[in-house]
Image (tube, rainbow, N blue to C red; front, side, top):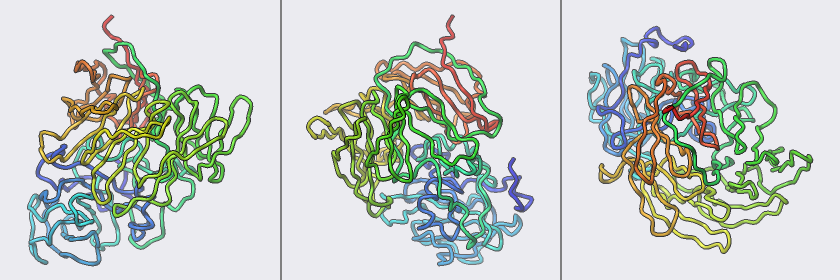
Amino acid sequence: MPSLLGAPRQALERPFSLPFAAPSGVNTWLLEQHYGNTQEAFVYGKYWYAAGQGLHFGVDFEAPCGTPVLAIADGVVRYVDSDLFGAGPHNLVIQHEALGYVSVYGHLRTRSPLTVGQPVQRGQVVGEVGDPDLTCQSRPHLHLEIRALDYRTVYNPALLIEAGWDRLAQLGRPIGIAFARDLSAPRRWQSIFDQPIIKMGDALLNNYSRAYPPTQRLAPTPYTPPALRTPPVTAFEGVRLTEPDCCSGAWWQPDGELAYLDAPSEHFPLVHSPDGRHAFANDNGRGVLIDRLSGKRTRLPTRGTWLTFSPSGERLLWHIRNGDYFPSGQPLTEIWIGELSGEARRVRIQRGGEVYWLDEERLLLVEVAPRTQRHTLSVLHLADGSTVQLGSFDNLRRLSVAPGGDHVAFLLPFQQRPEDSGVYVLATRQGARAQKLPFVGSFRWQDSEHLLYIPYLSERPALHRYNIKSGRDVPLTGDAALLHIANDEWSVAPNGQQLVLRSARDGALWLIRLVDGTF
């Protein structure tokens, strides 16, 4: 167990419980943002977390408005709706004198019915989940902090609350890399459990200039491989690639090369084309396309944004945003298409949202209505600029495009009808209807018609291969211990036959091969 660097002795005993009565699930609550140097904190720390040294000084749980919030230990109420703690519209502070901590509950829907000086017991209802934007549609969640009795020192709740944190990270908003990495020290602060203690009001801890991955404003969308069909597999086997506690955030380049950050570097990683011939780099905020054979360097008008190669590698895609995203308003997003020659054209302007390659001639557009979680999916045809709307969905999460672009998969939690919450697949053609799948779990595309998934919160993790056309679900045999994954950090190679994951057991990167074990 990592040290709490001076925290009270009880820290290693995890004396607190989760703040909800029901287990996590697509209709109850999900882990939304970790404590510490998250990507969100790195982007928004200057706006929201400056008092906490630029780090997210709590843990966020996404849940519908009105979800009961429970006291995480016995204690006494010390503050109700205090301006000292923010986290509106309502907050509550409980002191746990015997344990040496206080707990802070933020973004409550209404003023807590408790009064200052009132004793509370662990598991007692102390409030309800609310929405800081007062809409119950924008971002309803509970913000939970654990501080020292001096209120100035803030601790990592993952080290103090008894919970399966890596399993909880299988769903929710982030996929894979949840923490911002300093290229000068890429191993630092990359685990749910190794985030630093925060001293309220002290100097920023994450004010480094070279962070990876790029912020949401500058980041590329995931690469979409061409249509792919993989051979049947029934089993998996693994081999460790790195030493323990190295290295988070591994990713596959489009050409199949496996990349990860280990040693300090003065340069941002390159983005390879599918054939490996070209690479993209950001040179002092200016995009450069590099011909790796001839050495030719071609400038691109990306304005600091990273790009994504098309499935064939013949075209380029990037977006340019004029500001950071905020729930109350989304920046204008310019969508650009480029050629290997350096020619580029703007194909669309929209308010916020995302864009993905489907194939060489089609893009998937995602737009979000301001102050809501209403996502609209459309297909943009590059040949004539026409768009076809696929549908609108509430609370869409974890969108992923299948190789070839004929289907997308996504998670829809917290639906109006509980039976509608779950994982869905949608064909990217006009008139198609989203189909709910018979599982809930962390999923990745293996090929154009197979999803790999790990059932959510399973005590003994398992890897399944699901055919979206036939409905055939094949549990793969292998050492289940290999599937204890840290922070949902796993990804599939472009050829669909290998995975890379970060082990929750030893912090090392492991290569998992998918094989046919029937012979």
